[in-house]
Image (cartoon, rainbow, N blue to C red):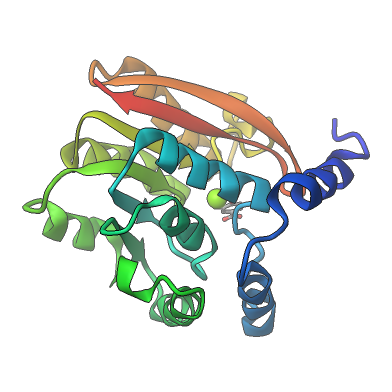
Length: 218
Ligand code: DHB
Ligand code: MG
């Protein structure tokens, strides 16, 4: 049951604690102008990603699901000089807009976009150094596959964050929603994996009722 006030509280938190951030409004305008879906992370969640990257001391960050680059820029803001973000995007037109937004925000040199199905581009990253932080926020049907790739591309101590793990609560009774079933399977995988120490938190705000899973690689 959604109570009124979630969106208003989020607006207050954004205005008080996040204050948009340089160039972030321009990213949102570009999403609207391109007619792309408004499914980017909330500003409060974007800043959480930046803070988690900082807390982790991550220098190498991997993102699966770029969209227009909103979360990518937050991740890049958390990475120190000399650090790097690799982000995977399925659609060339989304990747092109993300490239523009990321460059305009001043993070062009820090961010590498891999275009195409992530299940094709992730294997090309296997021979690079392990990633310190992975953010999974793409097609939900592949969440478990992306977790398995994240495990291959990280090291003990790396952090994995997955968006949209509550999906308005439908994970408890997926019915005919294949995304809900896939998210549930990914949570089950996280809980059962001997290589992950995981939890999840529910969130309420402009994006309704959802949540993040967070795990440390053992
Ligand atoms: C959808 C995808 C997301 O990553 C999200 O955060 C919210 C919604 C979607 O596909 O509907
Ligand atoms: Mg998401």
